[in-house]
Figure 1 (cartoon, helix red, strand yellow):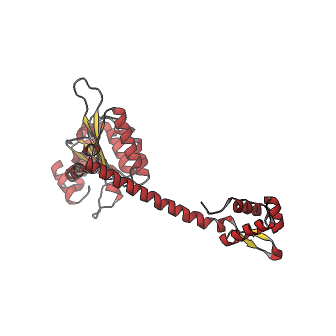
Figure 2 (tube, helix red, strand yellow; figure 1 turned 30 degrees about the horizontal axis):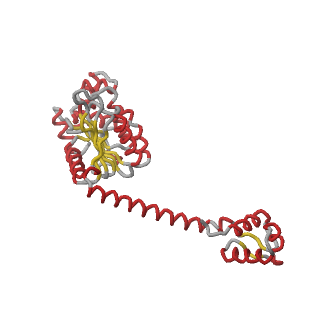
Figure 3 (cartoon, rainbow, N blue to C red; figure 1 turned 60 degrees about the vertical axis):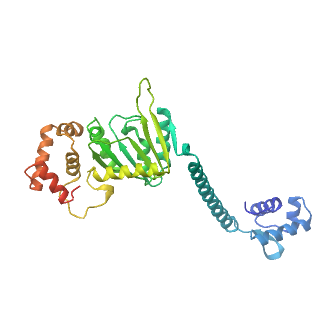
Length: 321
């Protein structure tokens, strides 16, 4: 990789170990003639890895000086070549998909295959993952999705719309709150049309059939770049705009208007606006129903509201959520 011949490499290693050497000494160690040793040293000087010292002796140039820049240039060349190969591979796959519609959609025939794709897609995500989470998991419960936590940790953005009934299930509120704390942006909708995950706007995975007749395995589709994928992205964005935000400060961005509520109060308010019943909130947060109702009344007092509808209107007007 560095452009050194076998004899030059051996000679350089000898100089590194010895510190300095004469041509005759080098020839003896390498078992070559003095003329060949002199030619080798001349080539090494030209390559910048050896230098002549006083008394006609030769010393090595420090490896980090002699070889470091060459390694950097080689690495840059390799990186450029890798990017070129990836670009060509993507163009090749795109060409295949245009000529063969079957390559636009891959069928995942089992729960194991679907789980593996969900894991792989999140592990390979670079920018953003967007999801619809419906009640009744197909592959795994949300709290078992360790890949999301790892992706959030390396800076991948997550936007998730949760079905309201899912938020009422045991443990879900705490799980969602933890995800929001790590950077997930979450919203709630009364009902979602499909369970779906889209990664980097390049590929989507969604179950096609959960249970049909005597079938016990879910069937899913892996949708690559196409008009169908663009339609799925548009579906998500439409639902996202209509859904109710969960949590206080989405993505850690401070709102323009000062908010008098602390994090716990904002979380409670977002659940109320999302339509989660008081009883479900109480059981999920480990509070009594009376405590939840007292805290809701406190929010109404802060907003100067007589009803919960007025509280929601005030929260929207003041941009508390």
